[in-house]
Length: 91
Image (cartoon, rainbow, N blue to C red; front, side, top):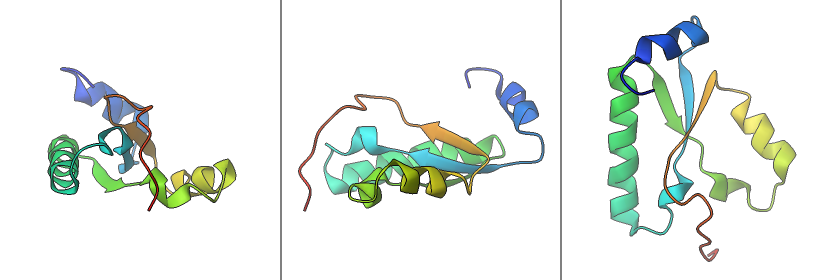
């Protein structure tokens, strides 16, 4: 988004529902991941978006079609930066 969040908002039109994929932070301690995700959502709220986490860990056994269906409820998918290829164990 950089220093021009209005450009993103113009692209979205009236849509503001934002799926936040924060799984790049999965290797953090649970408390740190929660805080980092909260801070990211606060930044998105500050520019007028309506963020909600879309946790890909909920889709491990469901397949790509289920992820697409979950994401389709949103106007924007915001993928959190970092190492998005970090593998963590499933519990």
